[in-house]
Image 1 (tube, helix red, strand yellow):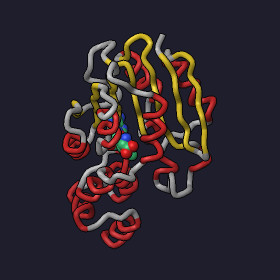
Image 2 (tube, rainbow, N blue to C red):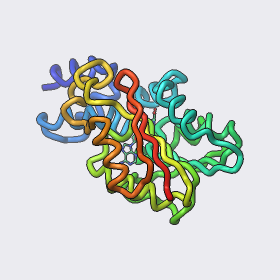
Image 3 (cartoon, rainbow, N blue to C red):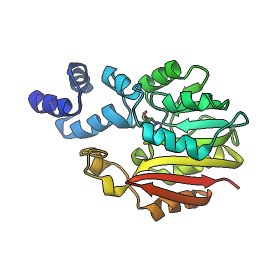
Length: 227
Ligand SMILES: C[S@@+](CC[C@H](N)C(=O)[O-])C[C@H]1O[C@@H](n2cnc3c(N)ncnc32)[C@H](O)[C@@H]1O
């Protein structure tokens, strides 16, 4: 078992620390791929995850697309849901906006707090945002949406904490990239992927207005506004 686990972890760039964490988890072998998806992306933990999500290049294409879509300025207050290593938060602060992030990974909250001094970063769940109604003018998500089991519920939560006139920008991976290096197994079969019109439909179902999706080479940018 350990040999198989070590080989799978190694294929994802994980090492001894991660193997020890898997063994300490006490979970059955059948759950290794679920555990791996958490460790690498769905709830990243460990020194390898901190190195990956603190790297300047991580998801830079998504970060740029989201920030360009939101066009933040000093009058804005941004919430990033699933803020990972905090690089989007850092770049958003440079626009003069007030910036907050939430993430359910303790390691990611610590990393984002380092990377984006001046941002308020909280440990929390996208499904139950720890903020009052109408707190933000803008909501961002970058490579998080495919992990959400209840996307409409999360989009409703985002709408709740958004001020009237506020805007949403979500960057996610399209179904055509399943099975490619952008979404390899075991993520391909465990993630949630949507055709462009279905993705816009989820936002509309949650109550967002003017939902539209731009798809460039399998990277989907969902934008919408709150009335
Ligand atoms: C693949 S990483 C992306 C991080 C960052 N947004 C980026 O683009 O580099 C996904 C992040 O979303 C967080 N996340 C996933 N599901 C979440 C949930 N339901 N609630 C809060 N955070 C979540 C993970 O802990 C992780 O930090």
